[in-house]
Image (cartoon, rainbow, N blue to C red; front, side, top):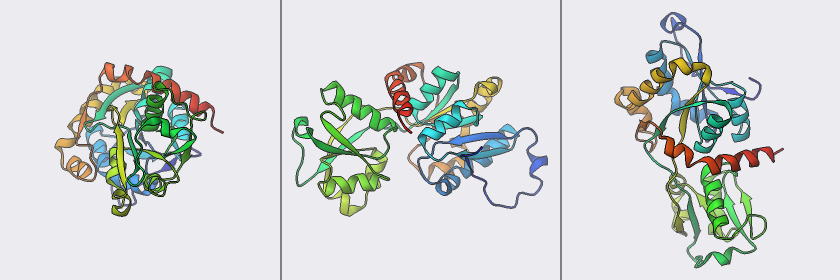
Length: 276
């Protein structure tokens, strides 16, 4: 598709068509990292799915979250891993089937500078909060948490958008932003010179990790795909994949977890509609 970046792994694959007959399964990967990094990270899963499903598998991504959600609803992906609130939105609006989520949960972490720590939320009035992605679940949920306590973005505080978690941490360290919203993984990845100069103000409630969903046109294959994903951790390819991240494995996603995402799903839809 036009904005979809194909993640072909450039290896010699002799006899590919014979080894994996049938229509190619297009697997969408949320663009949380560069296409090159995603390619490397998800290559073991691509190989595994080809063997398990006996069909060619193409890993693809999009340029950003907004485009990825557009491509999702346009039917560009047969199977995809996406942000939890985008997964719920896709389920509600287009009948996508949630089949798995990673074992490791996520949560918003609010950080502040050690030399000028925040003691109460009222200090946010008129100040900046650094964020990595305005559509990310941890940002949406952190802003809803602040809203529930009477602090509204644009009225009581401003958000500053940065290209990486490191940039968020640096902005807080330098005093440009009074607070930053970051994930536990992003916090762990901060360079020591930033990490030693910031501290955690609050850890908010857990949210599900990324969720795998199946397009409704593959409804008849959803159980088989789910079983393959849940077995992935038990394979050599799974061991290779999980050694490079904190996901730990996969499990089914519960109806209660999906319903808990309704507010965030509605909010991210509003945010997407407001983007150019």
